[in-house]
Amino acid sequence: MSPAERIYDIRFRPPFGGFLNCVMYNNRERTTTNMRSRGMSPPPVLESLKVEDAVNECAEANVVRAIVPARVPNPIFDGAPNGDVLEVARLHPKLFRAAIAVDPLAGEAAVTEIRKHAQNKMVVAVVVEPGILSTPAYLDDSRINPVYEECQSLGFPVLAMGGGVAGPDVGFADPIPLDRVAVRFPKLSIVAAHGGWPFVTQMLGVAFRRSNVYISPDLYMLRMPGWRDYVDAVNLYLEDRFLFGTAYPFNGLKEYAEKFADLPFRKEILAKLFYDNAARLFARGE
Image 1 (cartoon, rainbow, N blue to C red):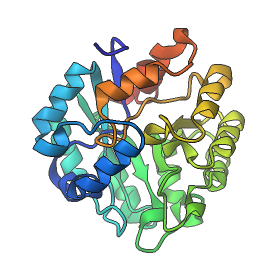
Image 2: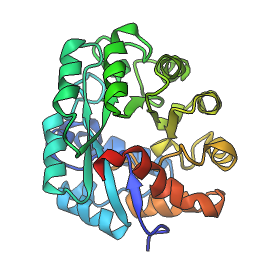
Image 3: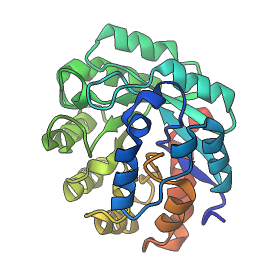
């Protein structure tokens, strides 16, 4: 059984549409090597490549909501178009919600794409990943301001590539640009996907100062350097702004949830981490 009655996974990539061309499924040897290096077992879906198996895995792990984030085509990871994440959400409306992706440097075209989905309750967030574009940019690049302004106006949280392989060098994972965006747009909710790793302490410092910043380390949470700092921050001041995410298929759902629950969090806040925080932040999809 899952350690939680219900789980909200904010970063879930099923084997569907464009995701099958992305590195996590297109280079399964790389994915399984990554998982085993972190002591995790590859989920069966990496063999079957069937979306039904991913849906069944959600049911077995008590994952009742999962956000499927689109990705703009890029030279590092390939891409998964908005149409695909909207379609998989349409096919499984009780489980999946969509996060559309825009080219943040596209100006009015990006704003138009966001507005197009403003009334669709299945769309709960906007993905912004400027560092992995063909011409990389930092999160605080002024050319992205129209996107942030529109998301702030419409109440769309931004899923920002805030750690990990966020660009051609590790500098794109530095949380300082994200901090500047949080100051510039104080009513914009910003989720640091990958949790600012490897700049864990700095990212936690940003979240301490900026109440509009949320953190989800996903695949960098378990058995990775810095994990204890995430736990300490949650136990001290971050319990309402920490989000459960698996980066599936880079973690199997049940195994990850069990190991997550075994971390030394205060047990009375586990429901917040597993479900409540995400349900509140992405309430437009409820």
